[in-house]
Picture 1 (tube, helix red, strand yellow):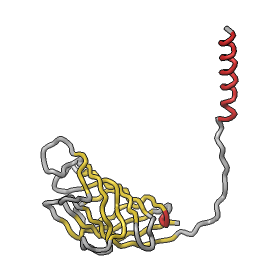
Picture 2 (cartoon, rainbow, N blue to C red):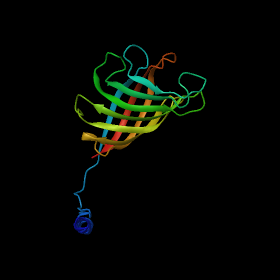
Picture 3 (cartoon, rainbow, N blue to C red):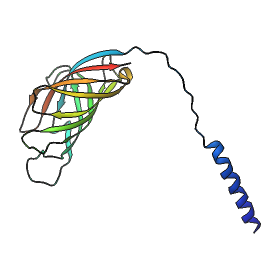
Length: 185
């Protein structure tokens, strides 16, 4: 009986302490004004599905008949970013993320893409920006949304105009030219 009284007293004490220590801390500070900067980037992304060392792989596909890249197919990517369109061009970073085929129309491939574009050399080494947007394949030039960044591109927003520099419809291999405008702090 005495053990129950001690236990009950301890529980009441602990429950009474919880509200005191359970409050969060908050302080509002007015930051100094920041100067928004604009950066323009130009590079090429190599999305290679074929060969011994692909940079993009299908990780899921719906169980429906039709083309091999059908509505609902999910791809993981680790695509190199280069200065020029040639596969031997200088690598300046990579885009890691995923895209999903989001069009039910087999004649028009459309993907919703999320990728983090990280730079591993040059002026922006260690910085990246994130893209999350719909990417239809039919217009020759497409506009995609930039939704964030880190390093030199902290709090980035902006857009990327992209166009296919090379496309192999048999293998799915694509080299995409990126012209990116970033607004960041």
